[in-house]
Image 1 (cartoon, rainbow, N blue to C red):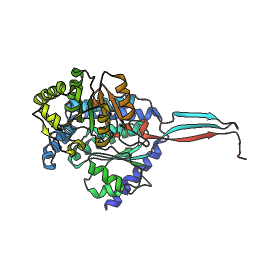
Image 2 (tube, one colour):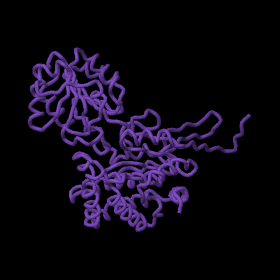
Image 3 (cartoon, helix red, strand yellow):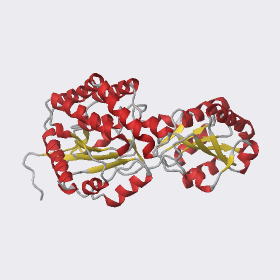
Image 4 (spheres, rainbow, N blue to C red):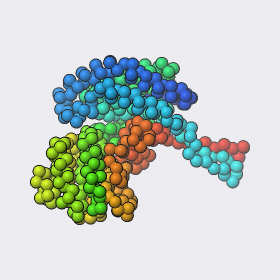
Length: 418
């Protein structure tokens, strides 16, 4: 079978499944989601065996330690995956919810109600837990999903896909609601991106080259999960103990994720007090700092930063640092070098916090809280299918609501337009 025929078959099966799902009750969809959680727990041994094959092959794909950590599963992580799926099951079903409504002067009743997007193509890298998050979110929101993971997680994803399809079938739903692309061939991605009559939206989640390819080749709308060049700004009035804790958590708690901090900006008024604290984090955590000239003068352990360092999503135990003269300079730096993902201010000055919130144009702006909280689960959305840096349709963590659109329903009693 050609890649074109293979992709067409997957797309058509997904379309048929999404149409069948329109008449499925919320309770039945929830049963399907809960069946996925049960299957994850009951088949954890098979998942771990498949994942071990991916971990063994990971160095051959050039994955660094942070990327391998994202790929690795354990009994605890599988349990966390199951709990995340259960959290999705417990959320209100968005489909059919009335967004707003009115009665026109001529008596027409107008409502705007939520509907599924239809068929979602999700292209992602490395993290197998994303497979079950996406499956649960799409099923609960009434969408069929085609999952194309990275080659580095192929064994894990195929195993998870088989488990999920079995659980969906157990609940009496079409297994084609969740399909895993079973080949790493790049040609399949190109073919799927041409299927705009079968696939309603594509969501890419991964490195810049993946995002750029999808943006250039997709013939359907894209909700993109772009770079996470996230900043922590330490304001002149910041509590330095709080600033140290938040920065360490933002950068070091898990480095290989998009909401990890990649740059710290420090107000010059407190730089001589705060940078030694950054040095302690460097020593304790093995953190490499690439800083401006003032950073290097106050923190001799730091390396001199190049301009491109401030645009880099390291996803590793590296952070850039710049001493700034004002809040306005910090905001300007974020505007120039950031990716509009997640940015944070540490301050005891209410007016400074409000100015930062108003002027920093990012999907999530944090005040005195770690950048790591820009996450669907942490913000009460359940699991997420990605964190969008777009401005249209969805922005920030994409949960159930973001996987829906809307339609107008107009009810009359024989009215005609004059």
